[in-house]
Image: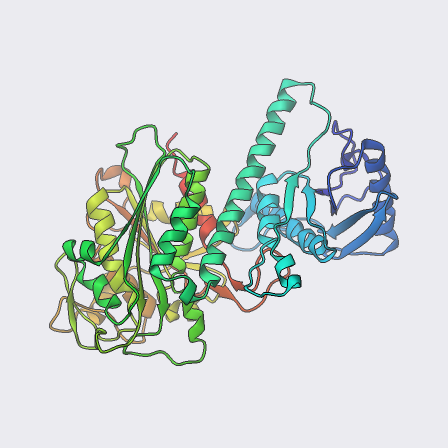
Length: 526
């Protein structure tokens, strides 16, 4: 169990809250939730004294064994006072982040002590504590040793609850809300872990076909969801010449995954649309990438992984919205059949595109997917997610997802969702002034615009393929039937070189799954 030990006893007579001698500013995690009331009190008192004797300070972690003679491993995490960060994060979000970090640190410590089951007290942030613990429990490898396989065994993380039934209806209602927040947080974390797995899996084990098969398995038993995996013939019928051009160099057949979730009471209500870039391996094509680091391009389908995972969570949580998801899936490979620099392709909206560099393939795949999603479904909002440009890595590093949008209200909603989940976003310029860099050839557009403002020219390119956009900067409420659009460039947040010791682990991050889920949850009309 994980909790911040208060100085004042409460009604939870069989939890560690009963100990008035416990320090105020530590979280405690216990191996499981089987302690009876008297043993829990004894353990709490002993941990409090052990913490004091160890001279631990803020941010320190201590692991104690056989506490209270019960054979329980107990982890104490010093957290101190939650501090507001610069940039207007606010006290509430600071407290949420404190809970996420403490839960994650405690989870790491208990895993190191070989604990496979433990319970977490919700504190004031059951959602955040569940997120932190779930993300910290993530392990991925394909090793064959028994030790490595043992690490893959799932850790059972549960919510600490009273064994005694609460006597008041108000207390029952409160406990119900705590349980709901906890379960919701677990789903948020599980969704991000799903994206991590999809992004980490080697490209020969996550082809376009396998991705679709994996998606279908993941959604088995999830209500109100339909899914289709379209092939090359279908893409040709839809005149998706831009998307198809990317696939020509690969022996792996393309797929276009189309998912619909009807969770709103009105099934005809305009949906939210997600579009995810699904390049399951990006060699650069004829414009071949350098060999160093190329293996990381197995995660160039990060947009597909994160949007699919977010859609799973939205459907799993039965968020009452309608959602469509469109994912163009292909490899980008060199061969005698591959698209060449200087070739011209025609997108499904009739726009001609000069392929100046085949390593700028993501926008070619997204172009047809964006047009299909916006013209076929007439959504109120389109959000595309893509590991699109190296320029975004230079601009924002691995801290923020770059957001380009034509809607001020959409930006505010994404920013609020990202701040609440500490999965932060940063607004980037979407300006027609960048257009001359990509329309200077004899075709309507060129798929690259030079080194300057590379992320911005990519975004302005994509804008040409969203059908029915609102006027830049205005609110959708005043323009019924028109579309708000945001492009999320996640190239910078795709991976981390090393763990920060909390819930942000080294490797593929699965960001910005939680932002997408939270954004969708907040979009529900009152």
